Image (cartoon, rainbow, N blue to C red; front, side, top):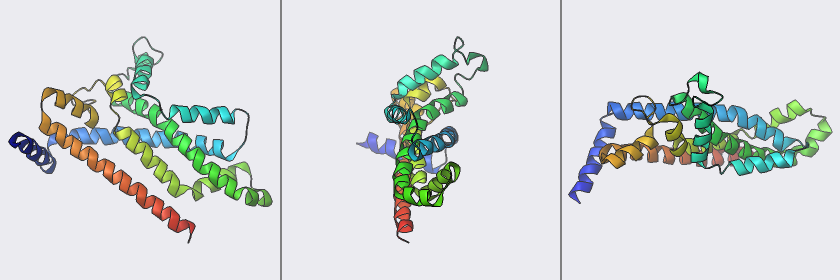
Length: 235
């Protein structure tokens, strides 16, 4: 029991002391995750909006693929990205393997289908609601997508936060393509796994506390945005 409390005290001590190693790991985690989420949104929002707002050949197949890719196993994504970036892979000359860029690519591959699939559902529901108004006003394709995206802005922020929550907790893919190299590619999740195996429980628990805090914050933001969307809808 004393050992447990000493580890817990030491972990919170690292957090409140702004331990340099801790701050470095958290900073890299946030940089990698936020970059991946922004890229995923830039790809996923338009793709999901097009699939949700229009009927075209292959739309059903695209929807099935997006929904299926939402459940991609992270280790499989990590393996595929590793093969692409390895010396014998097509992107090997870029020398991106075991760099933060490789981790961003892996997280982007994981998060983009989630963002696109959720965006498609949101936009499709809105499009059904406004279809008669769009038809009567003769709204063109570009203006239709723009209007739908703007009206769904609160829901899309929730989608982005869901993608962030998925990315920040990822360990399988990033450890394969990043290598968990100290001061280079070591992020919160991979460090927790490594330090726990080494018996350095204070640092592992400190990072766990930070990760849980981020998860609670993201969920609180999601709930707040949903409440704001409801209020805006009835305003």
